Image (tube, rainbow, N blue to C red; front, side, top):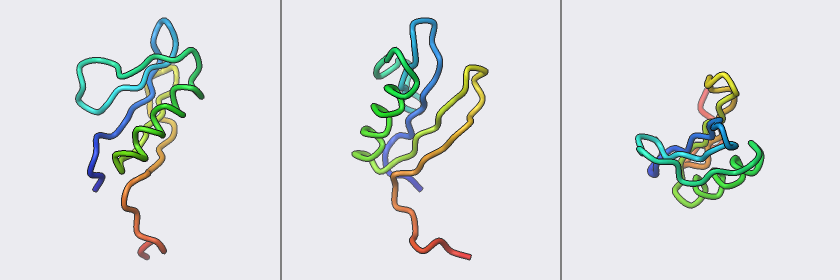
Length: 75
């Protein structure tokens, strides 16, 4: 389980936002999804959490973990 807040990259009218899980406000808004992902990735790396990238339709299309993943994976 991640120790920090998971970060979500979501579409906004004025660009792409990064929002911490269960936060009521966006952390930052960037002009492109890639810029927002980079910002979210930096936050997630610092917190040991995950990044969820949402498509324009709002559905999660990608997930990246920067937490304490077991390596090699179990199973």
